[in-house]
Image 1 (cartoon, rainbow, N blue to C red):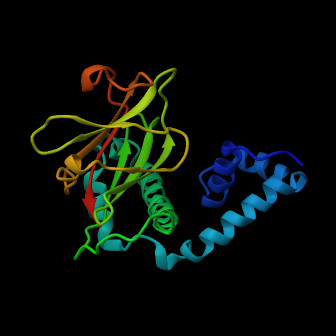
Image 2: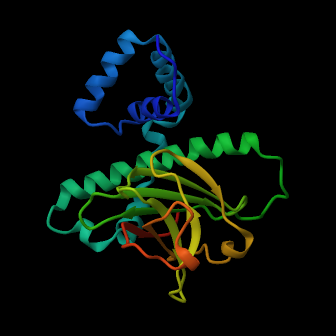
Length: 228
């Protein structure tokens, strides 16, 4: 038996969600057979997610044209069906994870005044070379964004999330966790910009964030918010 770390918790969830490649799955399967603590964590993830992983919880067919339109154009070029299949799987998994994280978040929060006609939105952020990918879902009733990074390569720097509304000005939403699903509160002054078509982007920045609120690194991944 071994002690469980945050990375172990994340790995167990990624295994159940099917985010690992064949080699990683083999390693995890071997660990499940020898590490009872880890095996119990994997089973706990299964119990949490099984009610939401069936076909009835996949994104409806009419949503795919919106999702494909919101993806960076380069991700749909040259590699055709294979790349599109990857993004469809990524988005379906992310929607499921966002639902699950939202349930946990709501269980931890005090009740707030109800908001009529909530508008759920999601963005699939990607890079042209496919090396960086993340999804974000926004709950307008809580002003909460749920982030699920798939892969973000920032080297010794940290991923900073930016919102770029119709006026074209990039505004920082803060440095985020690049290796596990997290929930963040969008500040009240930023919520007004959370609309369909708003662009989200990730740049690599110092731990304390971009100096003066101006991005210094290249855009690692970007994608537009769409209404589900």
